[in-house]
Length: 271
Image (cartoon, rainbow, N blue to C red; front, side, top):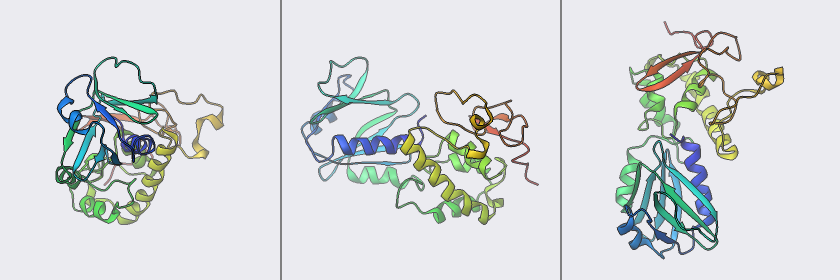
């Protein structure tokens, strides 16, 4: 599933391509046809992301809410737009570019109040200027749940996925199973700005890089990571491989239905 930096890249791109101009909206697949008809030819006034959610605003009270889920993708290109191929849920055509949305978990037309209700259920997004790390800390510090669970809870922290979770915990030496209420404040105060910086870097590069220069395997003459997620990482999807810091094999287990990766030496078990 795309993590928050991907949605912020999309919002930034869609602001550049479509905001402030009339947009032709259609649904070649048909599943969004009635809503597309209401929007067709209207001016897109804003495009923004909150966590893993994308919002396109039209006029005063119409908002298209998109959640890509596991399989959703947006593809943008310069005009002319070809005949739609495959299951295109929504097509946007602007002055000189078009965008096709395929396979999202959600693509729905909402009122402004309904869109605000969705955002109201989300936690702070590290990539938004209105994010409040104190709000996140209050939720984490009062919880008995493992930190690994809390970082992936979108009502606590919006936009963090499996990669950023694993890498943030490693970079700060935190045991994934540590209860939230046992995380010390100084560690959290270091984790938040680090997470913000990592995710902003993800927006810029369109890949997730978390390895500090002194640990980069390429500096040691080793082969760079080759993975569809891109970037160099410490533990994510490196089960059984040597830790880039201490050389211990990276651990892996299932956690709340997702894969969890950590180094047992660099992230010693709490207690």
